[in-house]
Amino acid sequence: MEKAYLILETGEVFEGTSFGADAESIGELVFTTGVVGYVESLTDPSYYGQTVLFTFPQVGNYGMTPMDDADRKCHVKGVVVHEWCDAPSNFRCQGTVDAYLKEQGVPGICGVDTRRLTQIVRDHGVMNAIITKKVPENLLSELKQYRITGAVEATSSARKEERMPEGTAVCHVALLDYGAKKQCVEDLLARGCKVTILPYDTKAEEVLELHPDGVMLSDGPGDPAENTACIEELKKLWGKLPMFGIGLGHQMMALAAGAETTKLKYGHRGGNQPVRDLHTGRSYITSQNHGYAVVAESLEKAGGKMTYVNLNDNTCEGVEYPEQKAFSLQFHPVAHGGPRDMETAFDRFVTMMGGDR
Image (cartoon, rainbow, N blue to C red; front, side, top):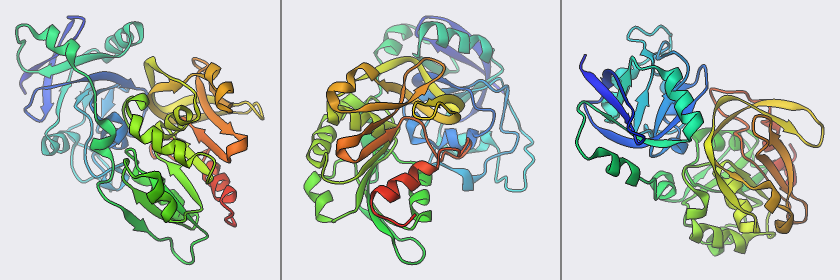
């Protein structure tokens, strides 16, 4: 194997070994704390434009299992691991992580001190980094200029698609796709919902012409405030139909209602993030992947009330808008590769729309 380098925008250089694609890639370096679920992470649209650092010491020991994919392709810009497994063991395995990254054109680096890297990101915040096989000159200025833009457009569905459940549909959901994981659609179908998947830039009038029973705002990547046109369309839908948002959809709903969002220092990523239900006092372990959060102090002016709080940093993890028949969650209630304790949120949405679940 060839030498490779991970160079941070702070100027620090980590030497390791190349795996995956023979390519050079700049991305926003973030870390995920999940013990399992690397297949879902590699295919998660919410990682668009980012280089993912896995804190678990070995990745790939059960190979690539396409049935667990969050989407149809790899969305990360690069992969950083301490060690990758070249001899996976799993009856569902259909190849190694190395072979998958080669197929997808994504470079990786292994043999680096991932604990030290995680400490750096925690101390300094997310930063840009490059995976390369050489140390180019005048690199730092290029690294600092990198920005993730157009993330929702790049990961959204290109055209409208209808999905039908088995048996008779109990309700009809218009799903605005901001970079949705496939599991989001599957869990609506499992509850008897007809789902019309709509591109991110669908106009409010087009949504209403479908006569849905409710609107769902999907998860997705990037800065929510960047999507100004989408937010204006959501304002036109506000209060007209029951609405449920997850991840980026949670943030976009808050902005449409008049609240604010902010970028977190290093975000929440992994299937082991603790939150507390402020109604019951009960705590849950949740799956998360986001770098922005709704500002809790801005919710009052937007008619919102915080329902869940992150137990690590006290940031907002859920909101309800009682007068608008709308609610949202920052975490993923049914994410693969993580806990499913909060999948009842989908049942609540179906009930809100008048379904019989």
